[in-house]
Length: 101
Image (cartoon, rainbow, N blue to C red; front, side, top):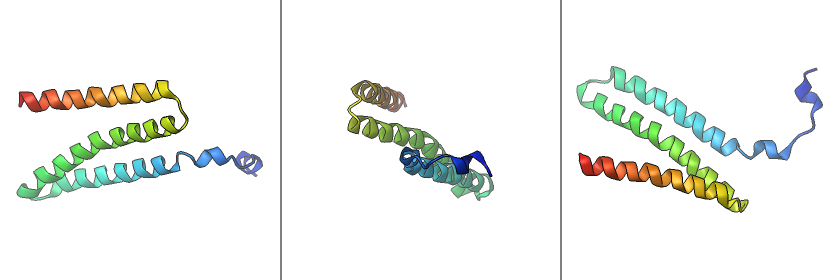
């Protein structure tokens, strides 16, 4: 008998399951898009590569947004402000990159 069978069920253990599911799907999708970008013919390979890069940038940002919502519901304003500041830094970097190019 394993030690997992001896522990009582903790209802808090499922609180991150939606985020875990999303990140697993995003990882699998990024892998499949990268493989498709590697083996696709010339007009499609760039599109798959751009989609891979966009997914690799967007997935952590969605995770931060999810955590901000979670922290907001718990009224943990310190973490909410840190998360919002991080998203603002990323948005500012995006604006600077768009202005330069």
